[in-house]
Length: 503
Image (cartoon, rainbow, N blue to C red; front, side, top):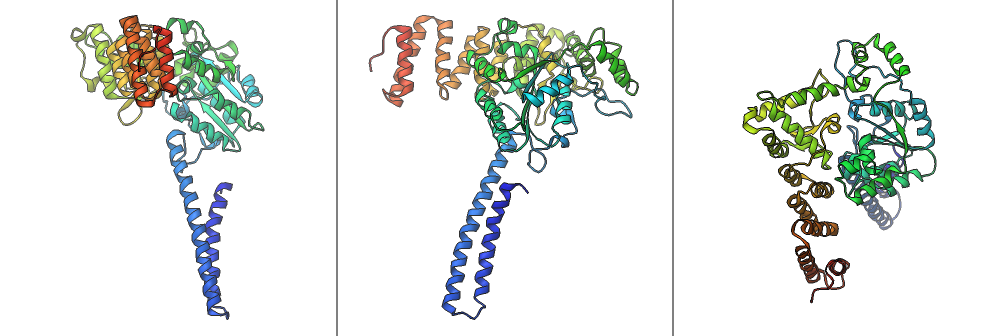
């Protein structure tokens, strides 16, 4: 039993003991008034402690229930031990094609980087593996963590809104690994912060470790590399917040293509696994991990599907899911959102001339695993789907259609709305950008400011000035003339228009 639980149950036991003592006193040869008074006092004390214990237990249960929704837990609602996690696919490792008589995943082939990776995990405590999609980052991290920290609790946020809860869960453990696969999903408004990571790293001792993975292109965004120039959809604030986290990590690169030594080790492992042997035959074109995860095969399947009479509607649904991730939504989306978004892509490619299949057939095709591995759209329960991450780096960096952005806005969370709004703004989809920032205006003052900039870019200086004037007057009427947000709005008006509106 955990120490926190012991003292809580001790309260209950103490209450029961006091009640029992009071009952025993009523049977002893003491004056009735004395025994009755002692019994009554015992009941009062027992009632207090029982109520206190019940309140404490309920508070703990409420916190546990809240955490379970935000942080991965086992079937008992507890944080799992690393040694209990024997299915790496659940932690983000891509499955391989099933073969009779062998495991779901091939035997792990020792990568050249493993020795350095394990050393850094022991010494630096925050290690970030960076590489292309399906380079083998998640598998390498999983194997290292299993080797080094089997007795640690594994803490994994279920999404961006679970990042803060995950940090608190780590701080509440004596030994823990914070697992951040595809860490870009957790960066930005309402997500992981540099302060949260620092609180873990500054914790005394070396029993708390952070292990993260990230695609190379995503890392390039946050450090101001070429990818940020090609497709700058993230706000400056999001990039700043993300870099506050990433700068604390020790980066380890994992190449997609395998070295001669790695291929040699793979040949030894391939003696008992035909999947590795097949991947080795393609090693001159693809990385071994890349081929085992069926990345190239899925990409070819997707590109071929646009042909008339093939699966163009399915291909459009997949592109909608890919662009949702490019716009900043890194979670499974409802089917109805993808249906609404995909129409623009289908129309751009030829619409009815492509002889598109039915929606049921399109979803069935997109969700069919290739060679028993991954599928183009990965189902996630409750009729939600997310794009296979290998595809994200393969698409052309074209502007997302306004119709698709509008669909994403209807389903975006508060944290995601800012990202989608900036994506729309970057691609000059001003109506959709204004819609996103308008939704944020009542929650975050940055939403009002960004909406003003969008109006100025679309409608000109005078419309921007009128918007700022209306905003300042509305805030003064609701919040008062001296409220911080009112003063900020008036300062913006002075900065942009040269005068303060008359009250």
